[in-house]
Image (cartoon, rainbow, N blue to C red; front, side, top):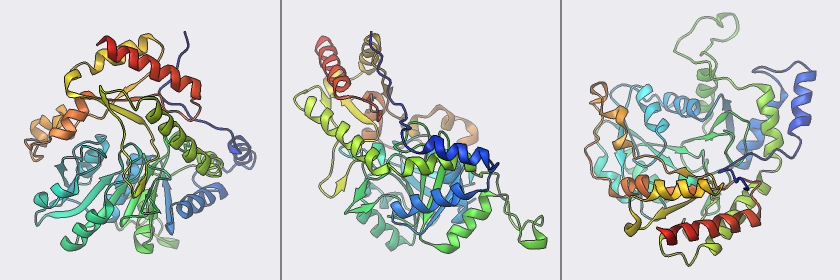
Length: 376
């Protein structure tokens, strides 16, 4: 039986050549030409001025929050439907995460629900371009400007996506990316912070490297820093990946459009959406079971796996995370009303979406899904 993984990386450019050079020249740690080249190429691709590479997307979020001086007493608004790391990094920074439900079509934070969550303690809005679809940034930025808030973009899932012809990652005050193995370009592990603000960039570079002093006062520290450095070896992979990022983005969109065509007449599921003013890169191609199949998601996923087709469930809504029900996190309000994100968390899953996925594989996945849905 053919096995189709949910996602796998594609390393078919200069990655091995650049890694070999890094090893041969002994530049394998947090210095070397590939770090600067990767930062410059990726930040330029995203139409920003400064790129600060770091150990992963999670640490990128932490650096961004700390660079904005977000800490105890502050609140950060974020979507209730997202990976738990977004809220975790807000908590690690000493601030309080405040949840907002998402739009039923884009699965991104619903701008119409943001202002009611703003308080005098609110310092930032953290947006997540969910599964490759950009958020409604004009509305969000207008709210942020009105209330004098920072906008943090988590663009980990949206490499190459655009909003009004502008790349995600350059739509707020500061943005973060992940280069984990399932991302559109990968370094295995890795992340990056992007910004157009030189002062923020300098703070991020300092924070990722223990906040060292300069010159003879290198080991005198004025603030807390972290070991969130990136390696030249991983940057070598990233540079090789970045050289064919547009090819990867186009392939992802091709996969997404092919699934949309194959599944367009399947009434039992909601398919991904693409607003007229964006390009969705379909990082993962998600489907959501309609109301009459509510509660059958895990059964359907298991039946697909029985046919060799790997899938993944959608993110679990933050207000339902068991960790936030514990007494030590009682400062987090999980009692709100989040019908869209809760429905998505219970009934959504994504199909194989890797860059190596063939058209024949997609037909097999789609046919098997259609037959499985009919049997339920």
